[in-house]
Amino acid sequence: MNPLDYGAAEFLGKQIHTAETWGAKDISITCDAVIVGAGPGGLTTAAILAEHGLDVVVLEGGNFWPKGTFKRQQSWALRNLYQDGGTRVMQGGNAFIPVASGRGVGGGTLVNSGISFRAPDWVLDQWSRDWGLDYSDRDKLFEEVEAMIGVEYTKPEVAGANSEVAMRGFQKMGVKHNFMPRNTPGCVGCGTCQTGCPSGGKASADLNWLPRALRKGARIHANCRVETITMKGNRAVGVKGTLREFESNKIIGSVEVNADRVVLAAGAVNTALLLLENDLANSSGMVGKNLHVHPGSGAVAVMDEEIRVWSGATQGYFAYHPDERNILAETFSAPPEAFFTQVGRIGPASAEFLRELRRMAACGFLVKDDTSGTITPVKNGPPNIQYTVTDSDLRKFITGIEFVTEMFFAAGSRKVRPLIAGKKFFTSWNEARQHIRGARDAADLMIYSSHPMGTCRMGDDPKRCVVRPDGRTHDHEGLYITDSSIHPTALGVNPQMTIMAHSLKLAPQIA
Ligand SMILES: Cc1cc2nc3c(=O)[nH]c(=O)nc-3n(C[C@H](O)[C@H](O)[C@H](O)COP(=O)(O)OP(=O)(O)OC[C@H]3O[C@@H](n4cnc5c(N)ncnc54)[C@H](O)[C@@H]3O)c2cc1C
Ligand code: SF4
Image (cartoon, rainbow, N blue to C red; front, side, top):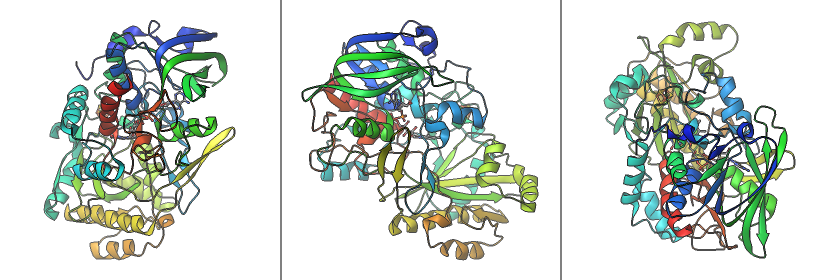
């Protein structure tokens, strides 16, 4: 199958139902399996279950976006393509850390950068050893995912000048580095993955796993938020939700699905919330706990040459830290207005920042976090998320910021700004390093995250885990989870491939 197959839209109104095509009404459906959430976990599961002959229905809270409907506008994207309008933050703890998640048919893959790493062997070996999981088939699973979503190294011609800077700097430092592996076979390097791919060149899950599921008869209802998991004794037998007008969020109908199998794939925050709100699957007390997010930070640098950080692949280059395997450096870009909001300065310094904007380069990194957060539902409001950065993770941050700052000086920058309190640019590596090492607290750093996981971890021990190694919850018959919440720990690389690989592995057992 072509990873960029645009077959999905032809099913609109027939198997893809939205608030518009559906009209206001209350409906009741009976099927073999209902899946809550249409991100990579949910859509991969849907495809495999449908191919096993099951009658599958997917319910997705966000919208369906046919090709060409994304607007290259940060404010539009936040409102339409992100959970809680892009305002979800972890504010209970020692730092204020945004935690972004996607919304819509495709979930996070609509807005992600397409970075496609296999799970590191050392992490999977740890998951096997500590959590009783079997990854003897890992190569086969990842090969299948890579072929399905079209993973390849970013081509130099679309990588952009920002990637060239990173290549030069990491090369001088003598560390392992390369163009980014991404599932973007039709990328034209427009640098706006985070507002939805306007060219359709990113192989998001709605372009491949979704049509694969639809061709086998699966149905999907967008604009449909699940609120209740229906139980009969100890068995999950369906879900209930509301159909909402997309723009206004006004409730215009209700949906009830009766199914032999209920699969939760609403993402690591929302799946945990659903279980907590329904008081299910929590005999271990672990639902909503063990939240890992791969927090990250970085540095920006002024180069002599024009970079135009917003052109070229959104995240086109990466490097491994030579001594700390819990740090992965990745370049990043953003449209000019978003770049200015995220890393810009205020007052008179902002004029200088704007003057130098075209010559700025940016590189971030993610941390495989030991810190684990906790999600608690709040009635009629966004969840309360506690996340207190541990001292050992703070040290990783300092090492990561040093790594990318040094890279920029090695690449020839005369002025580098670590993303750390003070918003200062430094003209020498020694001076910058001293400043970075002065950070005492997570609140001194600019931290961002977009990889929530671990809130319903999978493993063979029902006292420590929510989900069994075959995807079923330890506590209930008929209730399964196949999204990023099942990762037993943080992963250390961007998670979409691992999420899809888990679904490929678990779905046949669910069927
Ligand atoms: C800006 C950004 C950039 C990223 N970049 C990368 C990258 O380059 N590479 C990578 O590997 N990963 C990346 N990620 C992370 C990756 O996209 C996510 O880890 C992945 O999408 C999570 O998949 P999931 O199936 O667990 O859930 P999600 O993708 O979060 O999907 C869950 C879906 O469920 C829906 N939902 C939630 N609650 C309900 C409900 N009650 N009823 C019905 N539907 C519901 C949501 O609307 C959503 O569409 C990025 C994420 C973001 C936000
Ligand atoms: S950089 Fe642009 S064209 Fe390339 S995948 Fe991202 S949004 Fe699509």
